[in-house]
Length: 349
Image 1 (cartoon, helix red, strand yellow):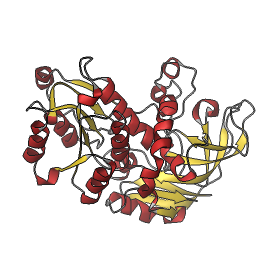
Image 2: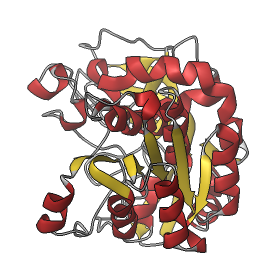
Image 3: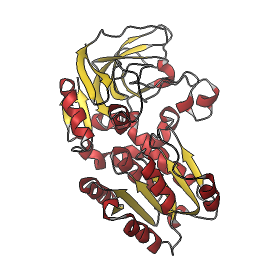
Image 4: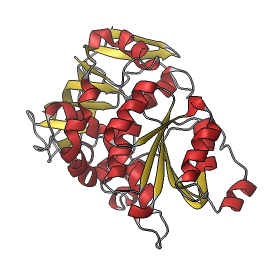
């Protein structure tokens, strides 16, 4: 089969690889119908996140079951499924407490630990706890968003609003989303479900800021200067700063900007993949009474909550599917996405 293989920073190749086989009675084999390129994969592609090589990329994919192990009960050959980007058993402490991202059996698709879905076929361990049948309320194109980026954006918004102080209604809140790539735009749509008083979107790419505006956020271009951006947030909050900031970028300067825009006792909900040091001191955090939630979205756990929000808003995301490419064009697709020339890339094997 054809597969996209990682060979080091800025080096991917489409190669012939063996079709995966069942290795355990809990496994399934899925024929991939669509597989998307995620912004978090750019951390590996760009070399920001040190990684081994020679594995198949891809953790956002949908497809059809072609083989099922003898212990698999939830799906059968012929079923169309969507796969969250990490393996989960749905039996351990973390899975049974809404934290499937840290399942005791957790493996990340598209890593040295487990080949991913940017291929014609993919093996899925612990299928009963990992995959879900394609829900009828989501169209075929939008379904791939439920593998990662929409639940992740939803998770960022849920944490931001859920951690507001009890005395504050969501409708009174001023919230900032930093990063208007695909996940950031999903966070914007999710945040708007809470009807905040003000919702700002921060980026430097004009096309992304325009999409944020169309979705309902007020755009702030940080290329025009941090002072201007900070002043606008203070203008609508009587000088306090934002009640919550959703940080999506995964880079230290973005996290620092989130901290600087925040009021005392404010919330940072960070869903970006970070590899650098935290850009503030303990004394600074103490002085602001910082409250923060960071980390990976538990897609399998949060799927039932996020699904109706995407179903309601799925037509707003048509721009995500402007660049559909053959899997054999993956090298070009990575370059386009790396250079931010497209919002999203979806490959079809």
